Amino acid sequence: MSRAPSVRWWSVGLYAAVVALWCVLAPLLASAEQFTGKVVGISDGDTISVLREGKAVKVRLYGVDAPEQAQAFGTKARQLTGELAFQQTVTVVIHATDRYGRLVGEVLLSDGRSLTQELVKAGMAWWYRQYAPNDTTLAQLEAEARTAKRGL
Image (cartoon, rainbow, N blue to C red; front, side, top):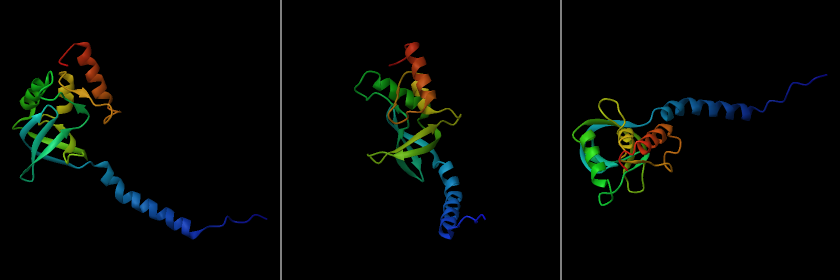
């Protein structure tokens, strides 16, 4: 004689609660927070200021590191960032907030290009492996820039 498996109602209830919670949170996790604003300042090659709700906020470019002003190519990196983005309307896809309170995000130019990718392609920034380890596009762009001896 076979017995029906014992059903623990609390486990079914817990399972239902987890499924319900996932249904609520999944859409929120899938859509990253973003905003659109005008670039009003260029601090250096990898940090800009963008208007958000009427206030300038600092945005650190996700996945790259550009040389500082006093370093070789620092001025050129800042100039390229300015040429591509200053006074332009951009979309910032926020990834995090860093320890300095800056937003860390991917900046999309009005034509859809990634500011980050353009800097790496031109050899004006390095792929920041520690913070974007799975970004194969940045890896490829950096390798191409190195091979072509562009920039850094």
